[in-house]
Length: 431
Image (cartoon, rainbow, N blue to C red):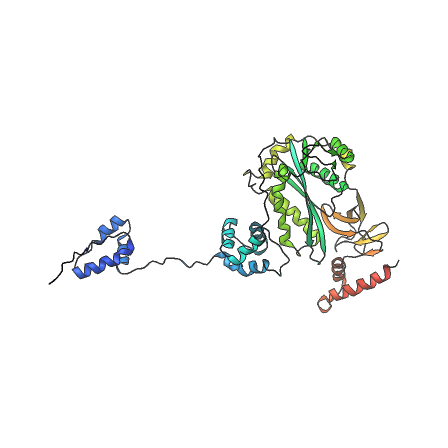
């Protein structure tokens, strides 16, 4: 007895990987394969058909090394708990590596790389801040019409010298072009605010018709609320009249009103990537470079470059008031000459500047109990006002000392500078 079983010997060739089966069948049945016809039907070269018939197996994945892998150890170190540097956003880490470690890749590729590394992605997940989910109505203002004013306040910064300071960054942004000006300051006093606004108007070459601001105490005596119009304090009101703009405070508790200046403030979080890397003077220069870079980069919201859009907006700003009016609101500059010990004098006490400025005339600004020393527009040094006759920054004294010592390689300049300064302060601290 036997049972007949129907068998299907049809072979369906769907893709190149099915060709080894066809070869087995052709060898067992002594059937000749028409390679040219297969190549035409599958849209490939005849040699490709021959290669797959002979058992070629394509690799499913290519083991390609990412260029970012070269930076793995650097990234791991920067994001470690031991690092004093802080990266709130992947964009900031990308920019830091690009500026300081020669990273050459797009921001999107870098973000994708970090997302695929759980050990790195978890860092950003844990630092993610809550976002404001309130409904925002988008609006635009005509060129020259409005600027938005804000402070990035009380940023705790570790200087290269190991000192913690609290800094503030003044921001004035033209609402139409999105061109902005940043100023670094240790103080948010009204005198500083008026001086920085005046300098910003001069940098823009004109005055916007309206300044949109929150209810900061240096501007408002009584905050604006949903039921109360608020009250601008007398000094700022007079300043606005002298400069020729209208003060428009936001309703308290509605930061989204100033969204054009509020949203870009996160760009300043890049400062945290340089915790412990700069002196105060170097941080001042970094903020200037950051300001320049942002003004010359494509704005994500408008798709335009602020510096280019500003060229159209500046002609529509109101004219600057007279120099006499502007000067009365600026922090006063004292022009002093650097003496032979690389120091300047303020109220009979001396304060150091970096080596190399002997005989040069510098600008000395004093406000909020601090002295700021500029050469042209470059900030050379800042000191707290002191009752001591001689006030050196250690790095200033060390560099000056190094210039006058022979056989520098045989001398521990750091140790010698430290001992000399201790002796100097011992003499002058009780005078």
